[in-house]
Length: 336
Image 1 (cartoon, one colour):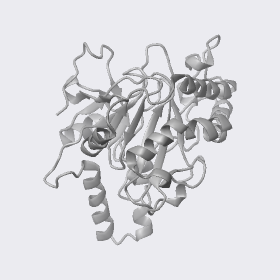
Image 2 (cartoon, rainbow, N blue to C red):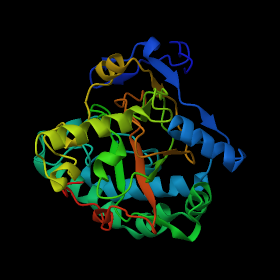
Image 3 (cartoon, helix red, strand yellow):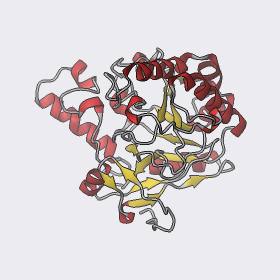
Image 4 (cartoon, rainbow, N blue to C red):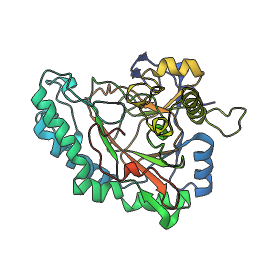
């Protein structure tokens, strides 16, 4: 069991889509230092479903990517006037609904805010960022990250980073990421995908960062709740006559809209009697998680209006079956 956190340890309330997390429902996401032996890191990944690795990437490289991103998006009006792009301070004079998060379980259009043209410009630039050389060819393929993943997994030269990545921001005032595990969106391949969630800049504990559902070992030793839910979905699908192709779809009739398990972390945590593990993140940190680690995010209530920016990078063993639908760049509404 993870230790509970007190209000003194996070003085600002932690908001999720269905309210405020009670301290009794909150635990600490355990950090792992960069000098931890790889065998120990592998054991933590196996036992917990995640590894929160501190300081893997050079901070200067992370902050450069953050600055490039917000310089690109600045024409949409997302930034507070007179602020430095690298700080990513939200322009609270504008409506947050004009700057929705997009991707899995998020915005697919149309815009819910009052300024349709401004929002359309924001979406256009946000999608464009995925193919900018500073991101696609440099940051998303950072040699330090690629080298670490190759060693951690033992895949070596067979390590393949999936082309489709998820570069997303979370502005204050918008909904949080819904509850899911990654295999939902990668069912056309094996369940051995490793995800690296990379915060691009510091994220305060109430700034919209990822939260992870604690793992409990069940009678099926080593199996996580995520894999149990996936087996349940497969059983339901077969019993209702669903085809294999329909079963592999993240948006089938057994899933919520957007492929989510739920949009409500409080309700979900109470249902399964598990805590949500939270932390603050610093530029350079990386969280690795397996394909069944259940995660979501808090809503962004950063007291300074800092926009949370992060990317999801996924890795597979190229010699094993993997979901080739991800052999493309991100597109809005691409069904993944």
